[in-house]
Image (cartoon, rainbow, N blue to C red; front, side, top):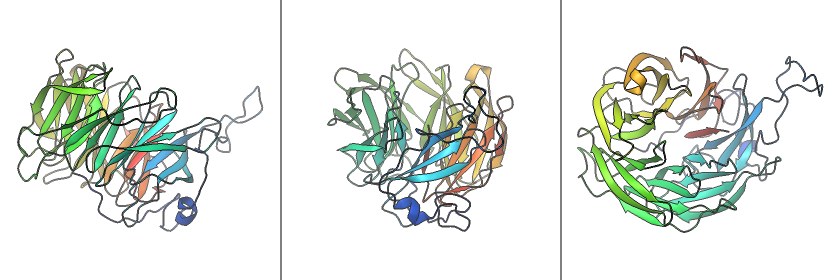
Length: 406
């Protein structure tokens, strides 16, 4: 379920209001025009050897975007901007893009030139932001209504021509066209509502929580927490219309939230928020049919820990699960060519309520957006063992609910 409630105070360096913040919250949130950090990158940390040809130190900073709630106490005022050091994960606040309402989830276009944000409000919307090269400020290209309430997730179809979004409160999935020239969004081409099967125990209706495309691009899958169901659609890439081809029912009360595919495309891993379990699913690429397996432990003990999201290493050998109630990250070994998860351990996330996790493009760093502590924590990833090691102090960011390293 959506968790926009809870007021946290960040600590450590960065954007937040807690003691020791490197940049004051007012300074961060009041920036009117800012460069995307890392599009004009800075020098490496002191001590690194200069480049033999230029005499300059290698540049190791890259940009990072932050999602938040703008309508909640303790939240931000738009999409936060920061940079991070690729060698140690150290983050530096650089400003904010205002004019984006409740950007609780962010997604990058395949071209890397545009970012999209949900506007998680009663009258839901999706906003496009251009990411120009050369250090120019991000530009808000406009917002389109989703036709539903409370959109909480979005993704770009691999072809880059369609944006998919999930309306949590109204249990529907929307499709918008993307301009191939500017990356701006056009009027919605489709809206499908999850009307069957009926809601699960304790649910008041369907609650679409995620929409994602299969690795081969053949199907679109929508995870619905309220209906305990994952729906499979085909997207007509000429018209932007969705046609349902199958659905997979989870056990009543599971509350599926987030699905992540194995690199092979033959398996997917599902985090069940309500019953605190995970499930390995088989996936048939021809039919788009998802086949859930038996529920497995999250490693957090008894009770509900609100597992939020799965993430896989680039080589597909390890998987990580963010646990919000337990405030931890569970590490699994991926075995049998993706067909099996073996629980290895859990590690403290270093913050409160890890809403979302993300890997850096080189897969060497893992970032966790901790909503209630208003912080982002960073870990180094051991490629051989999958072990996570905390990297530095938490980075303060107002009600951090999404982190997108570029």
